[in-house]
Image (cartoon, rainbow, N blue to C red; front, side, top):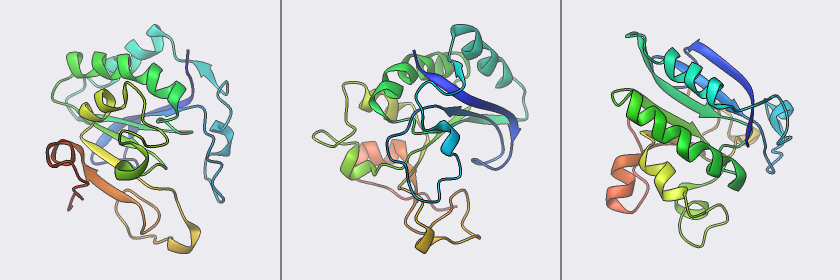
Length: 174
């Protein structure tokens, strides 16, 4: 079972509009200048139970909430992918009009493709349920404070449905 360190309801910092944000635990990247080091341990925080999942889904039911954002830690570590895939399926079934954003330090067209370092049997299913993937590690030398929804120039906002349809990264223009 995966763990989570925090759930932020009515979050306006991690994606477009008002969102519920889930911070999963577990990260092997250990990036310099990480803003969330307390999430590196896979057992940090609390177990991600069915009850917690239902609370998140309930928080998405308000009309003013635009969607769900998943951050970390690192949501696309292998263990986290296995735990998140069934949860994302529940979210899509219960809230089909809500958008799903996911932040990862891994690169879509390198790490998340067949043969990539984080590609698992469920990676494609997870990516197919995401509307926006923010990919790439935060790099201090690339830091730019005025970028929408990301901290450094190397990070990309990817339109996942278009990226999956085309087979290559399609950068979202806001």
